[in-house]
Image (cartoon, rainbow, N blue to C red; front, side, top):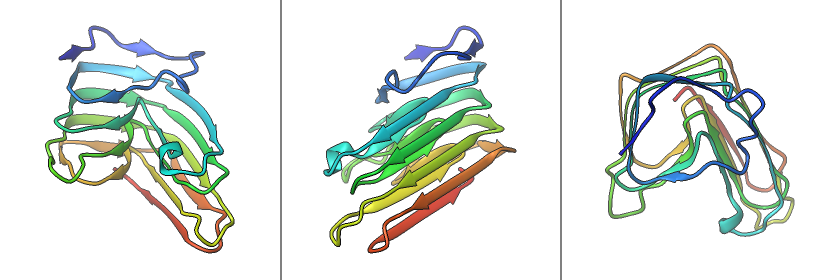
Length: 171
């Protein structure tokens, strides 16, 4: 279990290379992480180069996040090649696999997020899945309780004319 002991202001910290996956428990204890900033660009051509961005890149099997506030996160994510990109203030993706669906997010509030995601790829077999969410970019399976996103802006754009898929959502 990871416990956040104080509020954290990430002004001036480039979080682009720091974000881990979460497979355990993160308890914010009611504290706030403010001014998270991620500027990420990818050019990969396989699923392993899909970009996931947020405080955590992804929440994995049995992850739990609770009692956390995220204030004014800013994420700009661009994938110029064939695979996707997912961004949200907390995590880019909730990926639980096919056998386990035990990810829970409880009492997490996001205020004034600015999340801009652009994906591309021009080949006929290219996949340009582009998701932006205030809390999570893409969710396969998870349980959410008492979570909210207020204010801010979300944008998801694909430049792929063959398989365009771009989506935004509050959570």
